[in-house]
Length: 153
Image 1 (tube, helix red, strand yellow):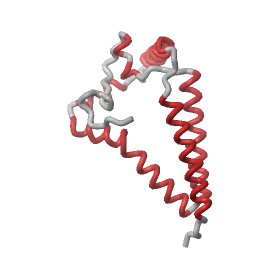
Image 2 (image 1 turned 120 degrees about the vertical axis):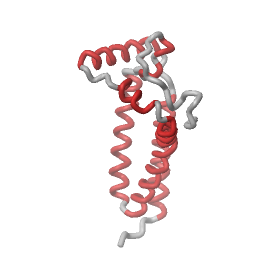
Image 3 (image 1 turned 180 degrees about the horizontal axis):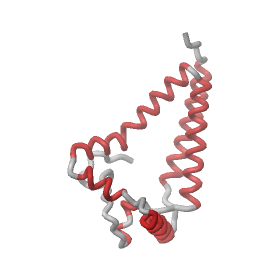
Image 4 (image 1 turned 60 degrees about the horizontal axis):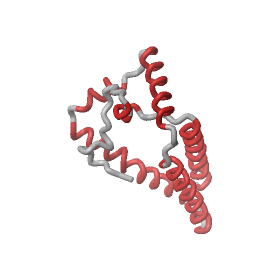
């Protein structure tokens, strides 16, 4: 039977985790200034993927675009589904095994820090957003498009 976790521990861990997540989302939401460099960096990555024969996003997306119901479900899960699942797992672990919770939280923090560092040091434009800059690779933005049901933030 799991031991009782002190309320002070739960409050401290939740406060720390919420603070880190807020900082992550604020830093992630600020767009780096040089859009031109971001577009050029994306072009270099896409051209490398094309030369290596691994640029398959368009074909993968085309296989699913005709299934609007599937796209709506996938967009909703992407936009709203994974946060409640992460929250539920986090709270469960915090209440039942705080050391596992801290390990999982720390792994997510390190992953987030690496992601934010790369985002700020080497920003890239997502291929779905390259079209306004004159590069249409055929990738459609199904999450933020007008027909999406997954409008968030």
